[in-house]
Amino acid sequence: MKRDNSFLDVYVTSPLVGTDVLDSALTNNYHITDIINAAYVNWMHKLSDHWSFQAGFRFEQTWFETELLGKDITFSYKYPDGTKNLAKALFPGLYLSRKWDGSLREVQVNFSRKISRPNFWQIMPFIMFSDSRNVRIGNPALAPELSSLAEVNHLLPFMNSKATWFTSLFGRYTQDVITSYASPLASDTTVLLNTFINGSYSASTGWENILKVEPKQGLQLTLSGTLQWTDVALQGTQGSAATKG
Image (tube, rainbow, N blue to C red):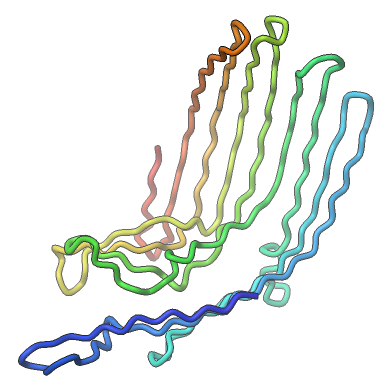
């Protein structure tokens, strides 16, 4: 259980308003209640002399509430909230591995589901003026990301174990992906307002390779490279935009 209260008081002085007058538009008093409870179980089993697996299951209950005191603005979410979003509280995992006798060679196949919550500074609704033309503000309505991951890894030794080649194929699909979002300020279109939003989804897949060679004791050479494709889409209310790279 975490409870946090942060406040920012902004005062302005001018001939029109007087001395040290509170600016209600920039002043914030922000209260966070974050409660997480979880139960999990892991099971490891050796299927044969070469094959083994580990299975896990985690149930995680989340209650998050933010309140801007004095402005009558609140936001909250619960996982699960009855049975309508029960899937957002369930996180299974399966890890299968195959090893070879007398060798470092190993193949792994992994499937899992994870949750990633927004950082503290991503939800704080305080305006940051590090650049007069790029204003940043947090978004207290950010929800966590929910990701499904799959990997196939292969570690192959060669040259009498003086070299290893690690190769990995991976894929990741994330719902409610947290991404940065910039738009012109309504009152001044020459100023960009930068914040964070929950997009519709992100999907990525890739191939990673790491080659290590030890030609002599004390000298190791490493060569690595990754090919990756990513697709990020916003919600329809945010313009149905998508980026790929």
